Length: 221
Image 1 (cartoon, rainbow, N blue to C red):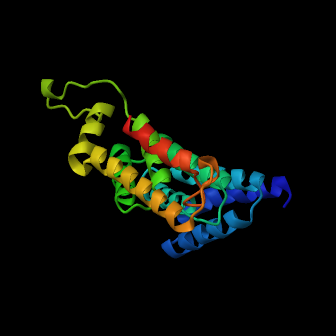
Image 2 (cartoon, rainbow, N blue to C red; image 1 turned 90 degrees about the horizontal axis):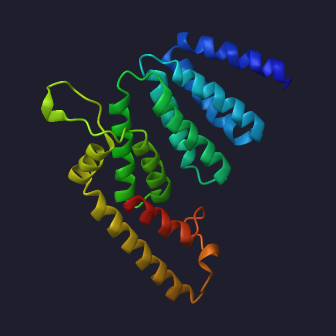
């Protein structure tokens, strides 16, 4: 498509989407999903920009939450290369941090909880850990003194870690997941009788052995 026409269509969609019915909105997001698989790198960047615009201008959170869901699903698609996954995850983080979500902190916590559940189920562990770590850095490291007043202060990073430990036993869960991963790796090596260099062994088809271990250890640190 001609670049100017494409831009005009995106601008028009960004304005019209707010008047779409739920069915029309669902159809629009189906088009996003389909376009993503066929688009060039430049087209994906423009598509991401349009998707972010819809989310970042959302005052009620409906569009933003729909976009967050779309991007998270894209990041789980095994058919997409790492480049697309990284773009989707980066957009996911930006929307969580810069959007006009009315309950931004609550939304972030909800996504962290969801990612923790994936780790517990040993599904998409590395993507979940990397994204959780990035979301955690969006919280301030300033220590608010909650006991000084009844004013509701934003959750800080230390309180967030305490919450994760209390609710999910995060240290134990990730440590056990690492042990489970190492056990599976040893079993795989014994079954296949094949020894690959760690940088060439991709147990999930996306992250090699070194990355599998390092991401878990970095999160624990």
